Image (cartoon, rainbow, N blue to C red; front, side, top):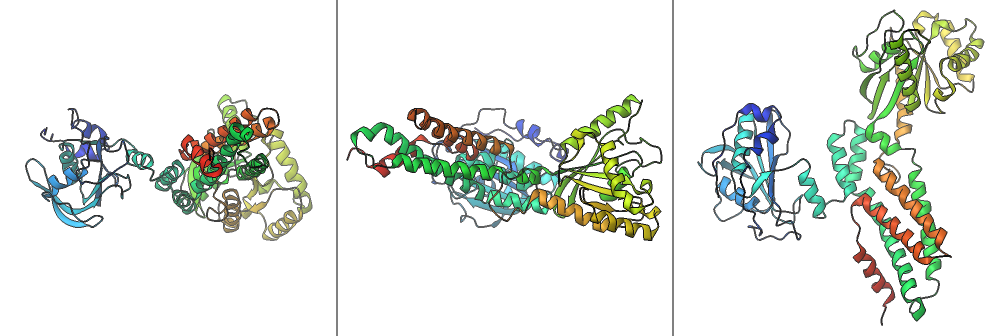
Length: 520
């Protein structure tokens, strides 16, 4: 049953209310297509799903906008809006066509149309793409026309990718990699996301899952059939070795110092120090804009001021904090409390010191700085090794000869964090400081393209920790209760399967019959 398109203002789409606009077009019951009109085949269940459509290229004016359609009615939409009759265009071939309203036959735009028959599409379903001009009026008209085609509705957020997952086109790690790639803001984030989306992390977990399935199959077979002497000797010894090796591999994988997670979410760098040391000036210098208020009045900064930066291709969340001092002011006390809390949570702390307060004798500077750190930060606030850079600011106020001697002296002293001498007023020493900062950030994130793929999600870590605990259960019960030991392997397999979204008991039975030829 057809129903007329509803005329909507152009501003509705441009203003970001696309979902509200399209919902007004889908208030009636629409018959579902249970067979692919293209004659193609999809996995069971996908043919019964609604056909969905959405603007895939983002909102706002642009040169070209991409409208994507997926589902059993995609071919119908293509025929009635492009005027192809009963024929469909060659698969994956761009054709220039007039796109028309299916009711009035008015030409809405002239653009490229592409046809992706199932199962060779992103979602595994029949899919169509309209590459149209990116003007708001054109986009609105095409979306309204699609909403008037029977069997079609607007896509929910992420629904195209969800269908790709259900069709087996992507596992959950690849889905997460795709999401990270879309949201990547730095070069290193792009590289890590692209590597995960390519399936490398998923293949690692699938390999572990395959080994666990084989291990579980051997244990189950030993429990059920060992009395019939149908199982080879030494099976459990092989299982013991496999479990031990796998547990060691996963534990090593977990010892990544959160590099992948840190790269994905950004390195938390906190600027801390006494009042009037130049913390806000350093923030503004790094951001290259007046992100924080700078004044000669001590205690100007009361709250945490944050700014996201790209440092050498790595994401950094930089936080300026209140000056650390005792104050009778309740508001400033809260600011100091928040500053100390941020220092404890930071991946890296930039401890800023006013270099003019250092002793005139260079040999006394190191002892002074160590005492200054102890006075400024409580024991629980002290950053760990490699998590702190000491930034001596206002060096433009020191004689040049004194600066050089001070720099040489502090480099020879052990027990101090790395020291950088800078001037936010003249930018002197800033290049060397940025080099040190970039090196520290890169060390914390690692190279996303080298070595084994790293963990990128907190949920991966949680499931892997559960997997290790379950493998420990096998080793604990191995000699006393083999059934409970087997349950440990099963729980480990389930935990791994939750990462990729693929768990199946049928595969375990396949391995049992393949490896042991039971009932021969």
